[in-house]
Length: 111
Length: 116
Image 1 (tube, rainbow over the protein chains, first blue to last red):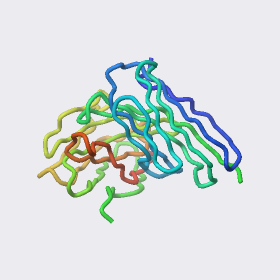
Image 2 (cartoon, chains in turn purple, blue; image 1 turned 45 degrees about the horizontal axis):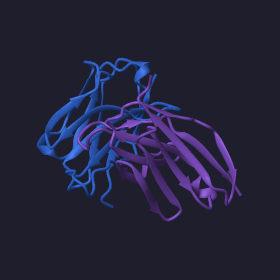
Image 3 (cartoon, rainbow over the protein chains, first blue to last red; image 1 turned 180 degrees about the vertical axis):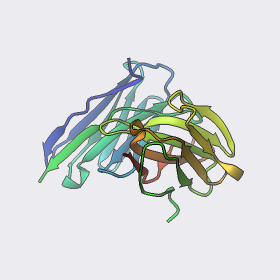
Image 4 (cartoon, rainbow over the protein chains, first blue to last red; image 1 turned 120 degrees about the horizontal axis):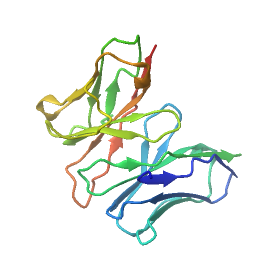
């Protein structure tokens, strides 16, 4: 079983829709969670990061962590065509350790 | 711009040749990570430095791979006797000291390697 599971999609939504992206994980010791956006042939770009459980909001993006269910989510409100990219979740036990990534979900926002 | 930089951005080599990649982290970051990413997959951890000390290595890092970070600044990743299976994007990331405020990883643009 992989440490982090993420549905690869692809996910296609109309402009303005609310997008929900999710990851599940198996290691209950994970405490640090991140979401990255990656455009084709580019390095990952940090979107959100959270520690432990709870919600964090930044503009149109909301990150949620449910440690009891080992489940994290990223919500994108009022999605735009420029949001079309692959979204990667990542997590770690400690800040000094390696981060484990999901496979990424490919999102297309249709104008 | 003070982001993570990587050089070269692209490398094509023949099987059996050696290649070396360079990563320059964000200047005040003392942690540096190397990852490998293949098509349709997330980044896979290779190795991690805190300052000049290599603290963690993945089992993915075979004897043909070596990484250094002299003086705790830039880092190099060398692959000896390249194989076609080494073809991938090699990503470098850096991170501040840690703690409660800023512990996450910032990635460079990557070096795309193609082994013929």
